[in-house]
Image (cartoon, rainbow, N blue to C red; front, side, top):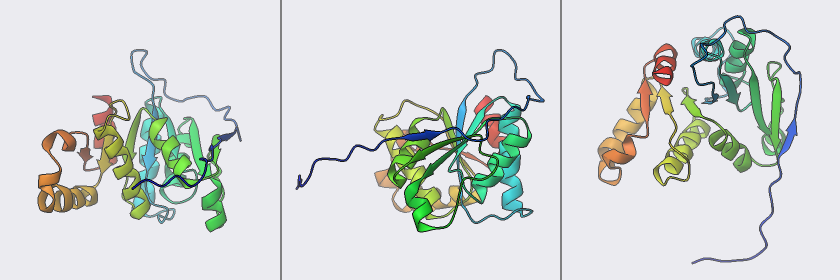
Amino acid sequence: MLFAVSKPTVQTEIVVSIRPSNKLRTTQPPEEMKIMKVTVFGGSAPKPNTPAYNEAYTLGKLLAEQGHSVMTGGYIGTMEAVSRGASEAGGHVIGVTCEEIESWRDVHPNQWVAEEWRYPTLKARLNALIEKCDAAFALPGGPGTLTEIMLMWNQLIIQALPPRPLILIGAGWQTVLDQAFFSELGAYVPERQRAYLQFASDVETAVKMLES
C-alpha cells in the first residue's frame, strides 16, 4: 500500500572545492587508457600502520598511478587511507561527505581530500558515490559497506545504472556472498545477476581486473 503524506523534499548538492592539489603526477598514464572516477567503499575502523589501512593506501596509490581519480566517503579509516595513497601518488581525491554523518559523530574530511562533494543526507551521499563513478571497489568493511555493495548491485541488476565494474576485494566478501546469496538463497539470485559482481583476492589483482 502506498501512502502519500507530503511533498518530497528536493535534496540539493553542496559542492565545496577544498585544498586544490597542485601536485604533478609522477606517473603519466598511457594515452589510450580510459581515465575513470573510481569509488572505493570500505570501513571506517582501520588505523594507520595496520594491514587493512596499508592495503587501502596501496589501492589508492595504484589507482592514482594509473591516472584515475578516487572517490571515497571522505572521512577516516579506509577512506583516509585510500585518499592518502592516491594523493601522495599525485592523484586527484574526491571526498563525498554529508551532514548526517557529521551530526552523528565528530568527523571531518580527511586532509588528503582535494575536492569535497557535500550532501545533506546519507542517502544522497550513497547515491553520489554509486551514480557518479565509472567503477567501484569494495574493501573489507561492516554494515555500511555491505549496504553500499547491495545498493549498487541492485541498481545494476535492474539497469538503473549503466553497466560498470563492481569489484569486491578480499576473502570476506566472497564468503558472505557464497554462503548467503549463492548457496542458502541461491534460488533467488540467478547467474545473470551474480555476473555483475567480480571478486579479487587483493588490491593488486583488483586493479589489474579494472585495467583488463
